[in-house]
Length: 121
Image (cartoon, rainbow, N blue to C red):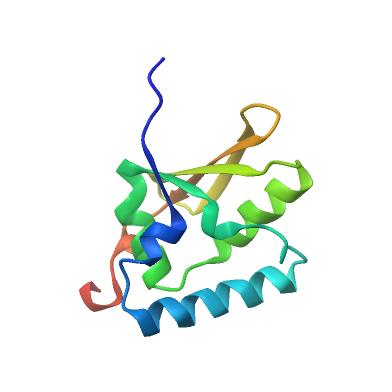
């Protein structure tokens, strides 16, 4: 079976302006500390390429609550590899599956209107 290509969240963040990226990293780090996930390397979370732009938009809009849920789930399931995919849905929710002993697959279901950048609304 062919492995789907992924990109790390860290690489997606590099596409943002430096100040926006720094502010976002601080915000996410603080959020992770608040849920006791400061030891989770959220920047290493992998995003399947077809979902890259949607994840970038969610990050730009500072809608990071899904990262908190995924980080908490990866910690509770003792997974050090996380792969994320975005699916369009009417309601926002997250589904996770432990793929193997160290990989967690997370599917974020999100309404299309939340995938618009702030300027497009």
